[in-house]
Every structure is written in C-alpha cells, then in structure tokens.
Amino acid sequence: MRSSVFRAGLCITTALGALVTFSTFTPAYAADFTVPAGTTDTDEKVLTGAETGIVESGGTLSVTGDPAITWEGASTGVTVDNYGTIESPNDRAIDTDGASGIFTLNNYAGALISAESDAFRIDDPIGSGTVTINNFGTILSEDSQAFDFASNTSDDSTLIITNGATGIIRAEDSDAIRTGLGTITVDNSGLIKGADRAINIEDGDLEPS
Image (cartoon, rainbow, N blue to C red; front, side, top):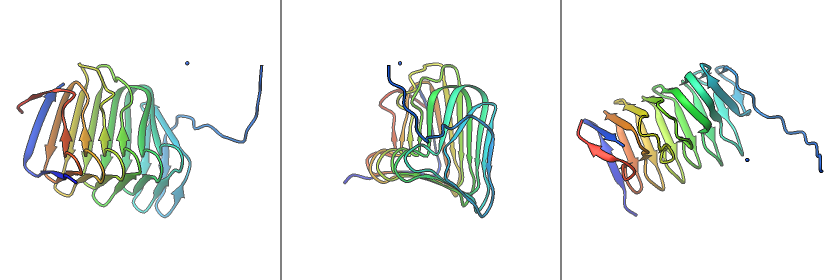
C-alpha cells in the first residue's frame, strides 16, 4: 500500500427533502457544551451561530452511530476547543449539516480527535465562510480521510490548516487531507501522513504560497 507523508517545514496554498410513529430517540439540539475533565459524554452535539464546544483535558466525547459534533446552519463563529478526546467509533468525529460561515477547531497538545470514518468532513458548500484548524494534538481517521472537504464547492471560501510541531494528522486507509475549492492554506510543522496521499489537491488549482 502506498503511503504519503507531508513533513514539517512546508506551506502550500490552493485556490481552489398517513403514518405516525413514536420512538424514544432524542434529537440533538444546537447549544454550547462542555465535557468536564474525568467524564465521558455519549450524546451527539450540535453547534451553530456563535456557539462553543469545549472538551476539557481528561474529558471524553464519545458518540456511537452518529457524528460526535455536527456543525449546522449559518454561523458567525462556531468554535470547538478540544483538550481531551473527541471520537466516533463508527461514524465521523465532526460533520456538517447545511453549514456555512465561520468555524474554528483548536485541537491542543495531547488531545485526540479520532473516527472510523472522516475525522472532520465538510459536506456542504460553505459560501464565503472560513474554516480554521489549529492542530497541536492528534487527528486520526481509521478508514477514510482525516479531513474530507471535497464537498465544499465554494470558490470564495477559505480554509486555513496549521499543524504545529506536536501535531499529527493521519489517515490509516486514505488521504490525510482531501481539499475542496476556495483558498486553502496548509502550514505544517508536524506530521501529515496518509495511506494514499498526505494532501489530495485534485479538486483545486495549486498556487505557490
């Protein structure tokens, strides 16, 4: 199997819808949340607008059968601060549902984001929005991409990925990062490794940074 590694010291930019039934299922509603240290939360979280989700050091957000966190709707500044663990053993750790606007993910040193599928998928065109990812911990996908942004077809969107010296972005069975369109900057001082490619930029036009 081919393996691709993107190591420290590189920075690239690309421009690129009668029966009624009832169940006990409780839907997730958008709201700020905090997962305290020493606890495990198994409820799916939804963030929109300017909401913030925090997983404290020693805290775990572990959701089975759904994304752990869904970024939903138009947002002026959704933020996820992870000091602990965010995981979905059989889904995505972070996903989108009609998302647009501004989203920031901070994964701090010693923190983990892991999923069987994509660790973070953008499944919508985000318009003129900006997604910023600051990684100093580990972001891991077992069977898909660490970052899958191929469905973002917005030419005027911006994606900024900073992978610090302690940062690891890894995909065990595919590309580590699959970009969409827009202006995409990857500033890497750590390790980006994919079983196929470290960074797949086939959806955009490469421009030097």
